[in-house]
Length: 465
Image 1 (cartoon, rainbow, N blue to C red):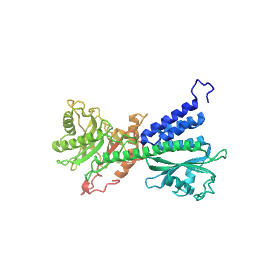
Image 2: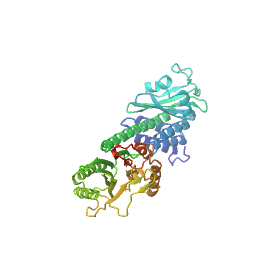
Image 3: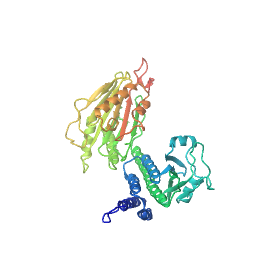
Image 4: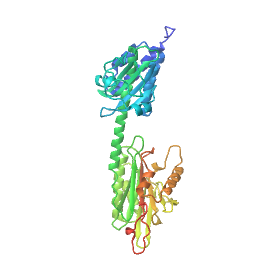
């Protein structure tokens, strides 16, 4: 308490900040969720340190933290505020069973390994069923107690509260055994209820976030094509969204057989990462395929026509891409003819493990910038059993790392897998376990092995295909 009657009491000021923070969370959680709790916190005769600690724990819910780290913060704050020996937060899955356990004062991983996750019965189950705080001064004597599993520390007293938001139970938060040996009190219950409210909102937000990520990823994948059978060429593609929202992006790939027998392949990236980028990506991909079918000419001509078509949009739509024709001359092997519109250069990986970066001096600008500028074509003979890799910049860009370093790393990984099956090569180059700052598309085309006498490429067995 303040010694000067003319100065505000720091504890009263801290209580006001806590209540204001809870009211802000209440606006997110829905009307009526926190009004009574905020008033109760204002009335509590708590010390300044406890109120400040409560404020820190509540405000952390809106910080940029990993959800599990946030829940660990809440458990740690609860045990610290109430001075308890043990604390735990059990998270319920959508089927009503516990799916995670975050603890303080006990090793959660060892506990889960020896005893498994909590069960929805006994004292903890009553928290879920009754949906109201629970205080027990003698756990062993309580008729609802079912004892402790092997390896679980014996606990004498318990304070628990359910994690609820808008009538949905997300789990429970509970403490055991105060360090001074006294029973849990009313102010302990009020503090834990405040923390449980913040935890419930954070879990709900995390689940909404995961649903949003899943929905946007599904939408993006549905806009990408199913690759046709282009034998004797083999084609594989991969797409992975950015690791964080927004997950709607403008990366795409395509491969198709043209009327003149050539195979047209393209990799591209529309500028932007929002709800507009994905539909624009679909429009550009469809226009490019139609133009390739109609013209059957060099890639530069096809991309030039695309550039002029994009000029019809009210607002310019910029995109980078590599468009290529893969042509086969009987007895002469395969040739790739390509044009690059401001995109990362493709890689050519030979069966011997050498990697060439297809980055000629003449480099086109992105489409949608200036359709009057000419676009150069380039051509190269493709060695037998070689692999052409086209990809978007998300595969080689990392925060704090030069993009050329990322390109060299990709080339080294591809060289080590030069003869691996094409699907295995793609799986190794782009995986869900990696963290991507941007969405990523990858298209790989493998040329057949050299024909033996009396057999054509289509009849050849392809090592590592």
